[in-house]
Length: 315
Length: 315
Image (cartoon, one colour):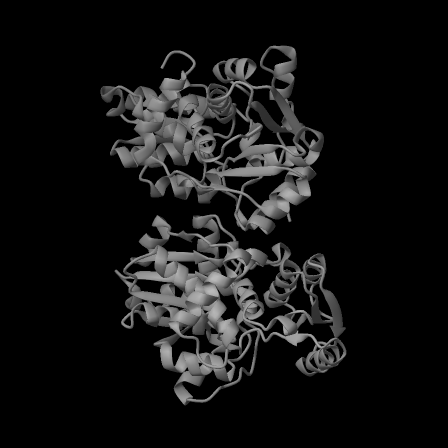
C-alpha cells in the first residue's frame, strides 16, 4: 500500500484481518460518566489478542503482503506490544518471525515473544544497536521488516478499531486515541473522517512527551527531549507517514499531566474493573483535564492496551 | 418467601430485579483454557453493580418485600459488598438504608456506602458489637433487616447469576461458585439442577476456612477456627437455610491453597485483563488444583466480584 488508505482500503483490510483479531467490546460506565459530565464509550483493545491494538496492524501488514515476501518470514525490533503482535501473527500464518529485543527488555515480554515461537535476537539497548542488529538479521534471513507505525498497511490495520467503534456506537461527537508513533491516531482519524467529516478527532499525549502536539504546531516532526512518562507506549516520535495523516485528518492534540494519567488509570481499574496500561488511560486523562471540551458530549475513547507489570503499579 | 425457591420463584425473581441489575457478560480465555486443558466460561459478576453479585440478592430481597415493610426502610450490618448492595438498592427504590459498620471498616467502603445516601452507624469490631448496634437501630427505625445470605429471597436473587450463565452458555458439564455464607452457591446449585439434574455443581472454598467442606462431611454446620484467608468474602460460615440447600443440591466442595488463589487471581488479571477480587478467583483456583475433575470439560465459573484495594495487592 503506497498511499494513505482510502475508506475502501480500510474496509478490505478489516475483512482480511477479521479471522486473526478479536472484535473487542465497547463499554460504558455510569460513575465515570457522572464524574466527567459526559457520555464516554471505551473501545477495549486491552481485550485484543496480545492485549493491545498492535495485533490489528501486524495482521494487516501480513495480510497485505505478497505471498513470496510473506513466506520469507517477518521481522521487527521492539521491546513492547508490537513485538508480541508480530510474533503471534507469524504463528497464526505459519511463517517465521525474527524479533530483535534489547538486553534490558523485561523477561516477561521476552518470554511472551518466545512462547509464540519467534526467534529472538538480543541487541544493545540503544536504538542504533537495535537497528544495526536488525539489519544483520534481515540480510541473513531475507525476512520482511514490519515497522511499528510508519507504514500505510499498519495505519490501515489500526484504523479498524475506530471503524468497529463507530459501527457499534452511533452519533459520537468526538473520538480520541492516544498518540505515540501515531499509527493508532492516524487510523482513528481516517476511519472517523470517512464516517463523518464533522466528527472531531483528538490525539491524547503525555505533556512530558508532547512531540506530536509540538509537531502539529510547528509543521515538522519534533523530537522528545525526555521520555520518562509513565505511559511507556507513547514515548516514540511520529513518522513521516503518520505525521502527514494526523496533520490532514486530526483536529488537535491534547496533553495531560502524569498525575492525571494515574488518576484516569485508577478510575478505569476501580470503576470498570478492567485492566488498562497507562498509555490506554491517556484519553480519559484528557477528558478529565479538559472538561470544557467534553461536557455533555458523546465521546469514543480507544483504550490501546492492557499490558502492565503488576509488580510496578503506580498506586 | 418461606421455602426453598422453586424454578418458577427464581424466574419471577429474575423478572422483578432485571431493572436494578446488569446482565453481566460471560467471557472465555484461550490461554487459560490451554493451561487448564478445559473450556472455562467466566460469569463476570465483577462487572455487576457495586462490583459484586450481592446486588442481585439485595434487589431480590427488596423486590419480594411487602410494600409497607419496604417503606420503613432496609438495614444490615456488613463491612463488605453486601452493605453497598443494600445501600444502592435502597437508593434505586427511593427508600432509606441503615447500615451498621464496624470501626475498623476501610474508609473506602464507608465512603462508597455513604455515597449511595445510606445512614451509617458505627459499632465495635466484634460480631456481638455489630449485632447489638443493629438491634438498637432496628428498634429505633423499624427498618427491615436484610441478612447477607441466610434468607430464601437472597438465595433466589443470587440464583439469577447461574440462570443467566446457563442461558448464555449451552452444554456445560460443571458449574462452580465460591462459598462463604453460601448464598451464591445455594442459588447456583438450584438454578443448575433445575436446568439439568446431571449438571455437576461444586462449591470452591479456601482450605484455611473449609467450614463448608467440613459441614457437608459432618452433616452439621461447622465453624472456622481461623479466618486469615486472602479471600475476604469467604470467611463466613453457612446459615441453616444455605446449608440445607447445599446439602440437597450441590455435589461437592473443593478446597484450595492460598497460593493457588493468588495464582488464579493473577492469571485472570494478566490474561483476561479484568479485575477480580481474591474470592472471585477461588473457582479457577479449584480448577488449577484439581485438574483431574475438569480436564476436557465445559465448566462455568462464577466470578463473584471485583472489589479490591489496589494498595493491598498480593503480587
